[in-house]
Image (tube, rainbow, N blue to C red; front, side, top):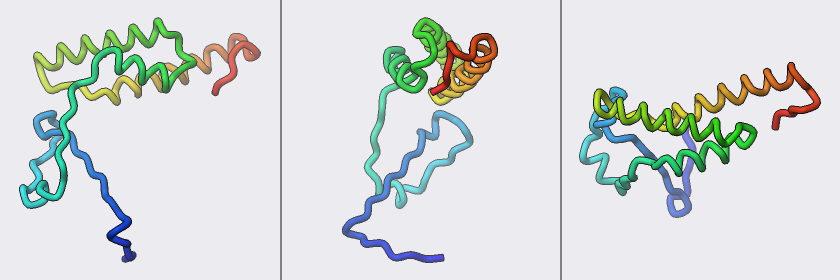
Length: 117
């Protein structure tokens, strides 16, 4: 399959976590990397993670999300000492599972009190 692209109207965005973060990634050839602008970001702070989780899961209590973020930061610290750095999507996976469990629990106890978004 092939398609035509209007090169003057088209831009591509590509991203890859650094090889040093693990996950079995290999270095890309320099000839390939020269085609991209490299951008480095600092590790997200607790307040950043809390903002993201509160925005994605407003139905979860703030205190619970704060505990999850704190737990995640402690895991990040321990893993950074022992192994690779933990990626933040794991935190969002936990919040997704917890949100679904709370929806089931609240709905079974009092269907009128909880309506999923």
